[in-house]
Length: 320
Image (tube, rainbow, N blue to C red; front, side):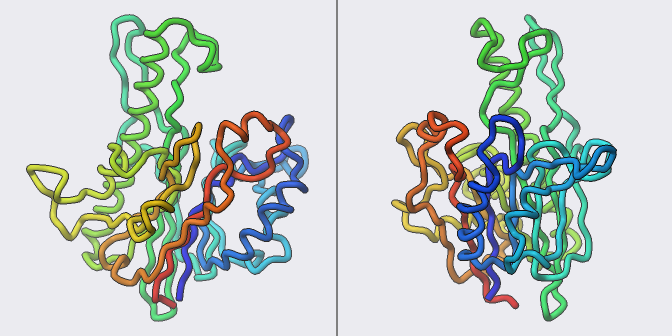
């Protein structure tokens, strides 16, 4: 059996005002070890310079997995802005027991940055906050397993040029609404880029084993997820049924089908979407949301909150 994990570790790093890393390690290391994943698609991994003049490394995650089964796993990670090391914040990483034979970051290869044209503010470009991470791993029988790790823009207003960089400080409904629309555009456009990448893989191999994993910042009925899944029931001009991605969380009982708690409401924003050939091998899906903290309570705790407000999700496949 192969266990595929997606998990937003929520700004895992060492920066002023963040929880002490040792405290986070005490929470995250035993949880990750207990999940016993063969492949981990992780979001929000911060980078740090190991020494002056050297490229940033995901040192916090390296410390979390030190001494665990994951320490020797193959690694794919999104690069920093200059192509060296990793970015300062919110990198995507894939750790794999299986060999990774190819990997690349994809950002505006298939979809140009969307732009909002509005009278009060002119034309505002909305480039994606971060790339998606693609990796191809090989199974014991030689089959390829295609992995797309994705973290879409959060539903928070994008700062409008010429305003204070803190979205919460924007004055006037027009600025707030324009910023919120920009965030939605980023989210749906990057979901489109991921969808087009899936289609390219299926063009090359109709039986491709593909998993799109990550924090989509969108629920099952929202545009980014609907766009990615391409369900035939969602359009008069129905896409090919063979191109649909299967939302594996549907196998979880409805009362447990959530990965975040927001102001008392439960929501499913983290997903594993599988191509139909891969979904046929799925034997179980786990969402480990027992004791999951509400985002409101985590915000009140500030640097004293050492966990993640996202629940890890594991899909189990009868693949070696």
